[in-house]
Image (cartoon, rainbow, N blue to C red; front, side, top):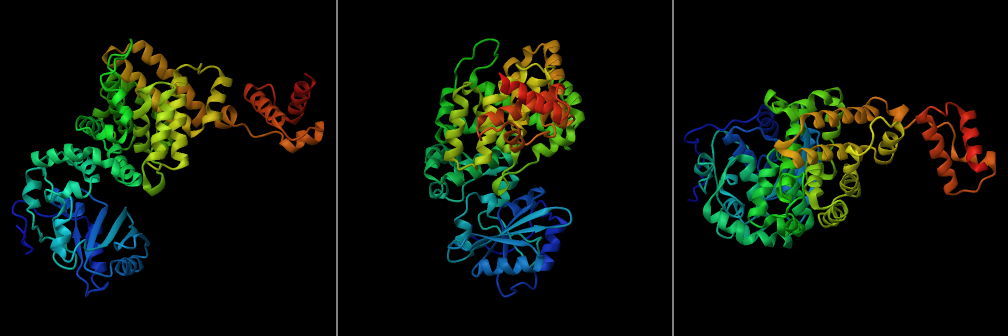
Length: 484
């Protein structure tokens, strides 16, 4: 049960990336007297033959000093995450990828105590980082559970000791396509409501790890079933079995999950990971074919990240989670949970702005250049998020009852809308300014105030319409407005 003797795995080898093999060689002479083990997800992924970019190291002492020495050796950045617990992070940019190396002191008095204090058995396998990486140390038989694709708590107290592991259990089961062992699932249900006793930052980070999954809709469905999602966002209860009026084909909760599923398909179809299967359906195939001309800027938009490298994909999914709560309620509810989960102000602005404006995407006239200008001028990048949200809301509203002719017409409108932003920005969205506010103040002896902004807005909109082409036209329009 608690054997710490290294051994070769019984049925499959550990497979490590070249970067990790190179890393081991580089670390051989860094504090060589200190024991150093790779543990957790990196070993599990090596066993499952999955790529990994996050490597957790444990050592009995001097963990922060060791992390700093590793960073010096790799010419990498180092950050202290928890001085008291002795946890530091090294960000190593290799020629091909970025690796995140976390170095921590044992959680208990020795290596076995550290292992017993972890979450799930498949995450307790470890290897000696200074020895043969083919040899597995596995005191809790995580190898067998990984072979059986089973997620099992390390001890009966594992989830009670840290309720955030309830959320992690669902995320890892979906991410790895593992079943949750029955007794562990019982603990998940029992401690789901205790997640709210954890700090908002930890809930946020683990929730966003769920929301960035390609199977986020499946994970959210499980979270709702065990009561975990309602514990984090109680307003979700208002969506459960709430009927939706025609033409909606789903109730509100099913609509939400279907919209998230469509968002996942759409993001994959736009990304470099696109395959023929990604665009096999009529709705997605027609949309992606028409949006292909904007593919690179859309990829750049999706690939944004926020504080602590929270991916924009997760923020879009978070936004979609609220959109069916009502046109007026959704932005306010989303703002509330953005605060509780400690999202940054720019993230909150994105979420609330997209929820408040996505209905406008299919309501505005894409041939009305002034209407298109006002949409993009006011929203900027938020408008792109609103477009994504409008698309998945529409598809989730109609489902299999989607009328092809109506969808084609809306896609044509989307192309015109996005063309203005990505291809015709200086003409339609933000023409180069012809006058500055101080010039208007001086020319017309005006005081500082709202009238200056109104004049500049009118001049800019005149440029969009083509009625203002130069400074003389701009002064003439200002004079005309002031005369009224």
